[in-house]
Length: 564
Image (cartoon, rainbow, N blue to C red):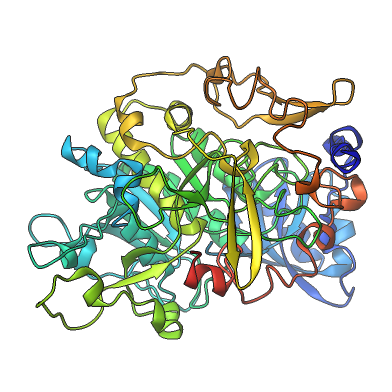
């Protein structure tokens, strides 16, 4: 219990006084003064030529406009940062950080088959997939009837690449989870069908990740800006972000979070993968406080991963131990918002880097063909991670918007969370490579519950207000943690979090009965103080996120192999 109480002191010791916070992010400090760095400069207004000239006068070079976050991307000498930050028009400076891209049983597990039986397919809704690209071939992304493509727009923000190409395989796989029509697994000869959640949506392909699944903040911001600009042309109502990076500052300052919020406020539902650091115990937190950015933003729908256990029923489904958990670093937002199937998901195969380097994840035709039938080639590929769970929710959002086009992003988020299934075990154990991981089914692990599309479609609830994810607040007198909804009236009296049997009267932990003696938190502070907010203490030494290991923290062992 001593460890438990010590860990919770973060809520007392971390008062983020942003008004007085320095303008240069901590991860820019300590750089060699003689080096040049790529940065994103946020201003107090949309920058003008005057602002750009000030950067150039200090030896900088303008790379891209980022009006969506009142900023720009620049290449700048390190020794010019302090002078630039002293400009009263400058709000905050961050590195142009690297981001990475983080069905046969999953469909019925979340009720997508029931939705299709009532005619809901996502027709007419546009979903922007901001990822490694969506391959421009028909296949399972062709139109359900007639010829043509389900992907109606392609654009790349990666220099030297072509639009309509996916050199990595990740983006096409994600698009297939959303919109695959099972062309290559439908008919009497097939024993398994790999169909997307909303097989008649229109996909808008905005490529930001390269061949190896790496991208930058500025590319993601530019793609979000383009999605907003194209919203009315293609009826873009959903953005899927199966990518992310570690948290370095509050979501209130993070430029990618600000861009995601701008899309939300423009009427676009933003769905984000939680990240795959649930096994990360480098800070002694047992994977807590590992939600990535922009999944740490309270507006967006952040999605964790479940294992469908190879059955159509959700009754035996279990948490994927690699799924990142809340509360969010620095801000203590309760995340994820939902969980959905994300483990060993079969979707469209595209011949990119992942498929080339991990041929064992090709789905053999014998797996989905009936006996006596043969087929040339392999059309599907297995991947695992919260990157696969996020498009489940994006597809669900498209179905709800087809049924009720007037839904706002806040109303849709609240409806999905309120109707989510809350029937979970107390704990489950996974053994991976001889290592045992225990998952607690608490609010920081499963959020409001397991995606239930049928229940959401049958609901007519219309919330009033914002659906921002609540804040976890520790009361040192009662030694309890409560959810602070602030002005988010849409949540009502704990309706989102169930009937109170698990969470009590708004209290997440009660007297610590869910958390036991605090061992789940390990021996290091989750809440901590200013000294625990750095990259090294929470995210380890960089070996977890690394330079080449992952999509949204998805190490090769997770993203490729999945978990039994």
